[in-house]
Length: 81
Image 1 (spheres, rainbow, N blue to C red):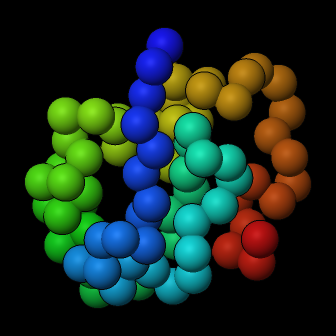
Image 2: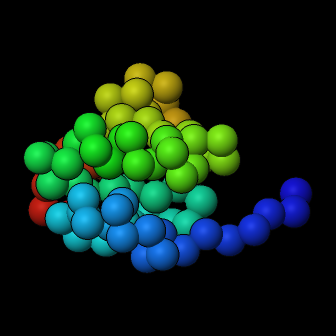
């Protein structure tokens, strides 16, 4: 599938919501948000990327078993990672 890359750093209204930069890998980012920006982040994300990317909460990811079945890694719910 052909696709165009997106650089999250080009969206200051989104990255200002971060505690630290996103991680995991380019096709499935993990966002670390400042609590005060939860709703603002979601609105900005949907405005910029809603027609291209799917935004899920950690709870939705776990419920849908997007990382597979079985025992979760001990750090999965850690705030230190």
